Image 1: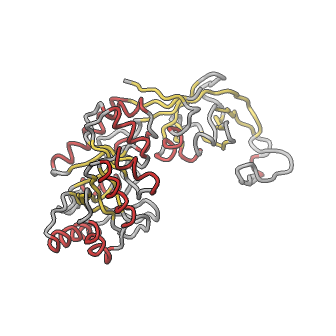
Image 2: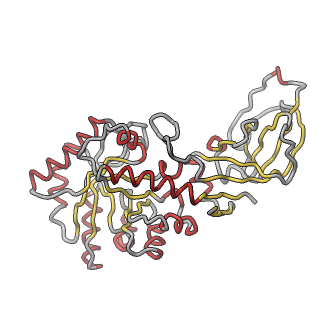
Image 3: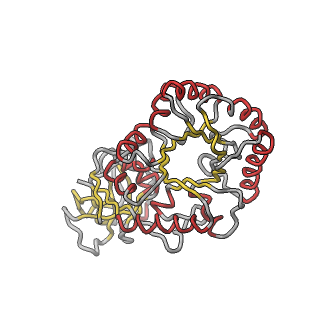
Length: 357
């Protein structure tokens, strides 16, 4: 059976690396846990780091976190479906909001539950996913701040989530100016200006982050050490907190080109023939994972001599060339993962999960 392993010491190192950087700049931050898909084994490892604030996009995951660590501040990080509002108020201390009707319903629910629910108003900054349009923010806030049992504790924005729009100094200054406008017009303090996720970290490390940005939500950089501007690993961080182990279930020397009449495969792919490879062969291995678990493009083989050929629903085919490492059936191959690959694996009930201490 394939196994996804989390290396505790590497996760701990990355956490303290990021935490120390934020402490030096007096920036508060929360860990985005949605990658873990509510896996309690891995959530325990996260909580053991001393995390004080966790962000997630699934209320069921926040419920699990509250059960495990009631004192951790939980943050729901997408606009609220109306039928989920009672549970969001119950299990999320804070939520991201962009719709007046939803906030009014949250206010009514918070009154019923006798709770103060905190919100961050998300502002559209060009990536065209969620967010209130900037020229509508003052009127939006004016209708929100008087609602009972609702406290606006921040303004925030997302970058690089849909169209790939990156954070810049100008955009982040604009975000902090929105907070200043609200504070001046309504004489209300906006404690958090939440300037971004992992994609904004390089601006901090290169001393380009505007001073008004004082809150972050970090997931990908914590688990993968990735600089999303360069595509490289941040110096001093680990990129292999997660590792996928898969077993070879077949290994045979086979022709490099298929034979017969070709049509689309079940994934809708059409194979292109390379006539120069006719008559040549290589060692091919079948592994015990497939498209149901992960898209092959998010797999990074630890053996540089190995290449991924493709996958069906529950099997992955890799090419070993001359099989210089003398792999055999039953041997284990190791892969690092990109973020979306790890997300798929963590959401798969067919892949075992283990912690390496």
